[in-house]
Length: 436
Image 1 (cartoon, rainbow, N blue to C red):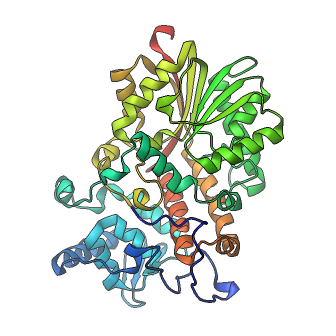
Image 2 (cartoon, one colour):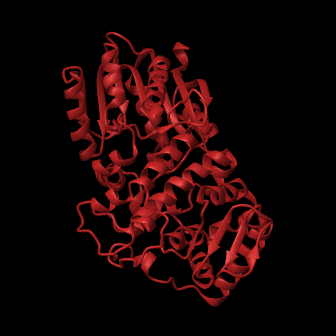
Image 3 (tube, rainbow, N blue to C red):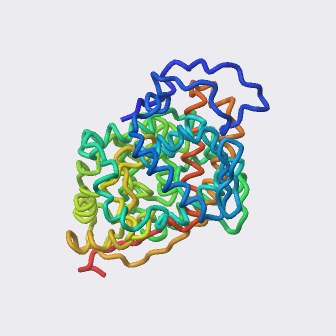
C-alpha cells in the first residue's frame, strides 16, 4: 500500500511556485520519496518489457482520436486532445513495469500532461476494450498485477481501507464538495450544471432514494455508509428514525455535529460499525455508493446482511457505480491505480453481478434500476474545477503538489469513465421476493 498522504503529516517542502502556475496539473517541482516512493523512483523494468510496452502504446495511440506528442517532437494519433509525453523513456518504462498503475504514476511524476486531461482520458476509456491486443488480453493473468492480500475487506481490512480515503481530512473534502458535503452523484435538471445548483441536485438525488425506499413518518431506516450525514438529516426531517453506519472516525464526528446542528440528534444514531455487525430489523435500508468498497468476495455477505436486516415488506434503495459486465469479469482481480492510491480494496460491480449475487445468495430481487451516468460526469467536473481553483488552500492543509496531481487525475479519470460510457451509476430498488 502507498503511504497515505494525510493532512496530519507535516507539509512537504516543494519549492516556491508562482501563483499563476500553481494549478493542480502543474508539474511537481520535486516528488517526496518518503511520501511517494513509487512515484519518486524509476521502476525496474527489463529492456524487453519496456520495448514491448513502447511498441504496444505507440500502436494503440496511433489509432485513437487524440494527439500524443513525445518530448515536444514527433506526434502519434489521429488528432484530438493533446497528450504531452515529456519524458517518453520514463513513461514507457513505468508502463512496462506496472501497466496502468505506471500510467497513473507517470502522470503524478509529471512525465506526461495534457491541457485537456479529461478529453485524453475519455478517449482512452472509450477505447479501453481494444487498447491491448486480444491475444495479450487472454494472457492477462500472466502479466497483470494482482490485488494485494492486505487490501482484502475483512472487518479489520475494511476499516483500514476506508480510513485511507475518508480520514484524509474533512477540510479537504469541504474544499471541493458543496455545502451538503455529499460525495456521490447528484441528479441535475439539465446540463451544463453550475456549482451553485449542486446542493439542490444532491438533495434531488437523496429524495429520490428516500422515495424509492418509502421513507416517511415512523420509518425505521438503516443507512449503510453515513458520509457526512446529509441523507440522515433529510430522512429525519421526514419523521424517520435513522441508524447510520460508518467506519470513518472523521466522518462520524462531523456527521454527528451536523445532525445535532440540524436538530435531529434524537432521531439519528451515527455508529462506528461495520455493516456485518449491525443488528435489528428495519423498514427500509439505503446505501449510497458503498457497495464499491465491499469487495467481490464479500458481495454475498453484504447482500445477505441487507436481507437479514430488512423487515417484512421492507425496501432497499441502493445507489451504485457500475461497469459493463464483460469488463468487470475481465478485471475483477487486477490491481489498479485507483486501488493503490485512492480506494484500497474497491471494486465496481455490474448490474448483472448484483443480480447474480442476490439470486444465488438471497431472496432479494431488483425491482427497479435507473442509470444516470452523465449526471455523475457533471458532478465530477464541478468537483474537479473547484479542487483546481483552490489549489493554494489544498497546499495550506499540508498536501503537496504530487497529491494535487494525484487527486486531479483521480477526478478526471472518474469523469472520463462516465463521459465515455465505461462507467454508469444506478439507483436500484431491491425487495424480498416473497413480498414482491
